[in-house]
Length: 324
Ligand code: MTE
Image (cartoon, rainbow, N blue to C red):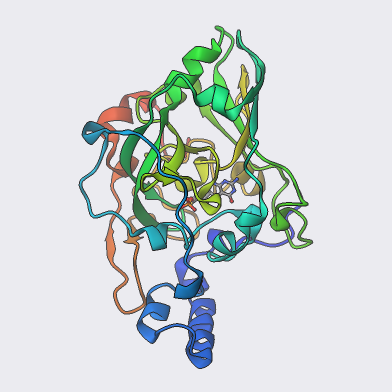
């Protein structure tokens, strides 16, 4: 792995702030954004550039799988993103992700399973009913959101693909297409594309693991990982891989993007854990968005992002400071 430059989302918040302050000042000077709005969401799109919501989806609400915490507004969920394929700035995905075409879309399934092949996305999704689950999302950078996702339990799709007994892990891969993804053709890119992630099979089969195709009742905005992305709410956000084109069942633990880039900082497990700090910043607290310089909205981070009841058993007997 050739690391040219550390990505901005891997920086502690204190180091990122000066750029935000600079961007705020620039927006203020150009008069495009109200000062208060600029302070609350630095460096993002102006109100005139609000993302257009997608197509409405039919779904059933799943209160048993949903938090009743205040949802992060649609504007913040869709304008403050990490999607390095479109740039390293938080506003870059909202600005550029529409350069990616998501229709038609297919997903290759391979490896240790009974039903390998290339699936048109609609065939992969068709037999399933969509659910709405309101989950917390905690980024390793120490900000968080509450997002109403629409999608299908990952376990339901996996069962249909008939993994065999050698399938110990599931690997996921994002689209690689530099023509459509400007971050992949950037000379300053830090990542060895395509973006790759993985889960242990029992993690993937956990009832919380979710393949999302939308949010706020509509199809997924491109910047949030259209047309299909993973959501694993007890893990740091970087595990929730976007715009998936490949699912592979395998015996060995897959190499994952951030682990390959900086293994001493990002592990395979990446479980949210306030007791295990990142080497360069604390994980004890998080900024719940919307958050601004004047009201950062800090709160305590909870182990497994508050989903310990559902997932703690998966890690029984493991030293989580070693398997971070
Ligand atoms: N998936 C891909 N393909 N590329 C990325 O850069 N960023 C990850 C994750 N999935 C990323 C990705 C990170 S760091 C986070 S925090 C979440 O997406 C952010 O999801 P959101 O933008 O929908 O909030």
